[in-house]
Length: 172
Image (cartoon, rainbow, N blue to C red; front, side):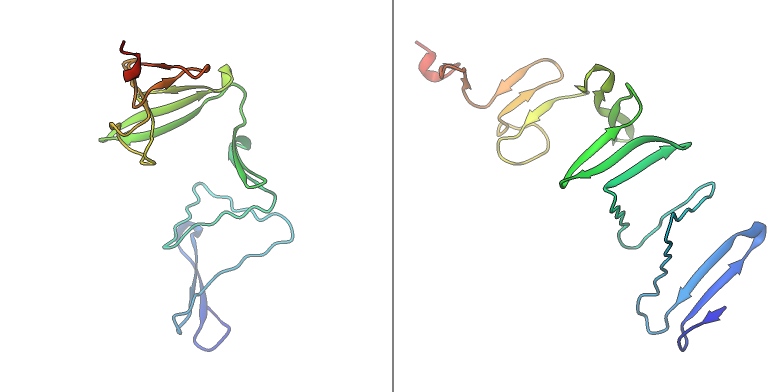
């Protein structure tokens, strides 16, 4: 146990198998923060590392890159490029997939096929919202391309020369 200021403590506890706990206590109920500063690289090496916060978890990389690695090999990079965000799949010809949970079952919602110049495959409908609302397809949407191949447009279709297809004035 180390005591710096009155009643504020830092306790290091070594438990079974070398497990180490570092706990800080501030009796005034202010933030009992822990700061680790290194002039070089800070490394935390363990079988599993968990970041658990009652607040936010902030990743602040002044080098503009956040790297995700597996076995030392970078698989994904998030880059700040003039405040644009770049997601880069680092392995050649590997896909970027968006996977979620639909009613308790896993669903691959979208696949960007990097071996085919980023071809996008969606597992269901593509909806272009006209009312600023994102969600299920509705009559307010400008265009819906359903997974069954049906294309629905809310309004007339404008052709490059300015003509229209399917408008009431074309019903002659």
